[in-house]
Amino acid sequence: MNDVELAELNLTEISAGIAAKQYSSVEITRNCLDRLTEIGDRLNCVAGTDPDLALADARKADADIASGHIRGPLHGVPLGHKDMFFRAGRVSACGSRILAEFVPNHTATVLTRLDAAGALDIARLSMVEFATGGSVFGHNTITGTPRNPWNRDYVTGGSSSGSGSAVAARLVYGALASDTGGSLRIPASCCGLVGIKPTYGRVSRHGAMPLAFSLDHPGVITRTVSDCALLFSVIAGHDPNDPRSSARPVPDYQAALEQGIGGLRIGIPNNYFYGYVDAEIGKILATSIADLRSAGAVIVPVDIPLSFARASFLNSLVFHVEAGRVHSKWLRDCPEDYGPQTSDRFVAGLHFPATRYLEALNLRTTLLADFVDTVFDKVDILHAPVVPVPLPTIEASDPAHLMDYADYSAQISHCTRPLNFLGLPALSLPAGFDANGLPVGFQLIGRPFDETMLFRAGRGYERETNWTSAAPTLSK
Image (cartoon, rainbow, N blue to C red):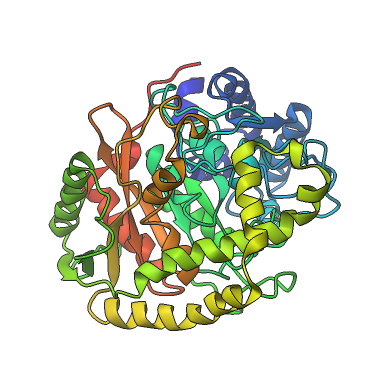
């Protein structure tokens, strides 16, 4: 099998192949490292690698298999992660100038769990500055903007821009990402991938760069639904180091994948979600709904409670206050080290009254109950857009050149941002391509802690359409 064929294998296939000794971790890892250098540089999606350490870890993985010791379901599989998940002794720059030489003294829980499952952490992947940077499409004035492997002139989505670009380009087999207002689902959609934003508290935030601690959701980006369920099953679960992580037992997310979606009630929103949807994107979304119906789902129109619109505004309020608090010292000591849009967003959070912030947090439970009672009393899952417009070029969407960028950004995250405030799980899935050949996606939204249902529905859709097998024609 040649290098390109190895790269085209998905995470589930490569994991099984390594365990069965069809491939060695060393050959797979070396191939990924070559691609991270040769293709990753052209896409500007790699923040850093340590080839010697990666290959040493791969040799250890192969030696363990030879001795009959398999550490877990990801044994020997090379992954890369958004450069905000701390590993003790290694730089975590978070897409910034301020932390360009920051070396943490502790490791993120999600990384320790991946380590325990046998995965190899071979690359830090690019991201928007401090996971915000004023850019919903992935721009970064500090480290440069990652490029979409489907067309390098176009955006990847942000803030998990490097994760989306690297996984789509087949540089690694999956990646950690984060979602505070759409930062995982948007790049998954823009790059033709599968991404899970879990229920708030389902995955530990310990050792991950904080942005807005009431809204931050670590998750994963992969090529297929099966890959996503596998990777997510490793990182989910309670962590005593994160007091907001849930103690609920972690179900077997892979067990129900092949049950099909016959009779599953999938809701189509009558209001809110389609306010900014472009006609071309609307047609692709309509086709995805028809495909779900063909797979056996029952399509049910459903009204979204009027209170849901408040969740978007409240998300922004909480975000600004919490992010401003995290960055207050740097804003005083080294404001010139931020990109201009980044500092503006953080400074805004320093001026909200504490009463408004506390009122917003107190409304969270009420708005969540209203949404769950109104929507999930009628359906099992809600279908909704992710990015409501065709993808722009990097140049055309540069925040520095758009006078109305704040409004534009709010429109792009219109469908994603409220779900962070409510803490609901959402699975982003690819649905085809626009007239420019760029990916289009949608999201399936579930009840709290019902990621199992989302993966089941996503897999049913995947079998019906096979969009997840599409790959960009990008060679070394």
